[in-house]
Image (cartoon, rainbow, N blue to C red; front, side, top):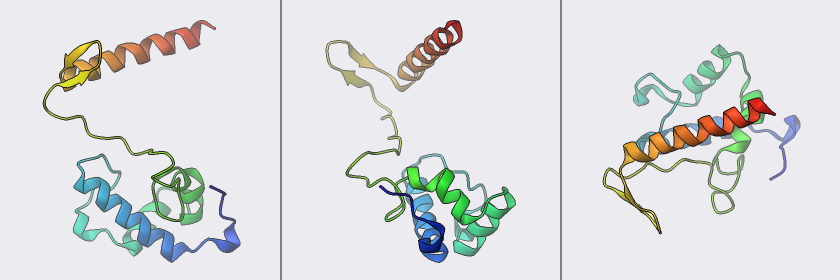
Length: 123
């Protein structure tokens, strides 16, 4: 997806769709940066939040929004999903390896991540 130039960027539309995206993520139980009650989330309060963190809505789009699943602004969901999926509470079956709990998968991910970091540091 191409980067939207500033003269084509529709701030009101972006903020409205970003609010919808945050509420979708919250409903799915995924992490969000908004810590106030969701009932207070609207385009105006989101803009205040973004400005408070040292960015304009357009700068937010360039740094984050274009990589998220915000319709018309980010990577189309059908192309690549950048939204992590919650791990089921029950065991997850991995073909040829067996069934694992959420905690086991997280621990394995941390070990692999640590090994990768170590290998990068040793280069």
